[in-house]
Length: 172
Image (cartoon, one colour):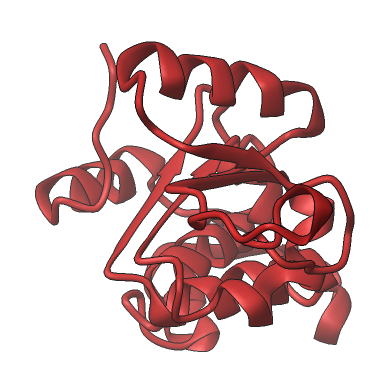
């Protein structure tokens, strides 16, 4: 479970509240370490769930890839900027996961390409390439080249497409 820093303990507590025997570990360092070493060198079973903040994902992605079968990204709008280390780490986790969920109560009010970045991180190439997505769903807003900004042409239509495709659920 990847969350904002201030939500790590809350997620761990809620997971154990609903599933009391669940072994939950909150990652303490930004680089991976043994999850089975235990105290005084005694072995212990690996946790069922690892909770960490977005800034630690890059350091843990390789160690967790292949081990993590499901990944939950809370406040998924954190993935709106492609190219960062945390974005790349999250994408690496997604590549080997069977189930991927992005949760957010915060709409992305920014530019159209932010939607592409979030959805492409969760479900790579589902919207096609960035250029295909921009051509299909967005209009040019300002700038040129890498500095160009785009906005969604029809946010309601895009939202309906996501909902009808089963990619997005919306709380009403």
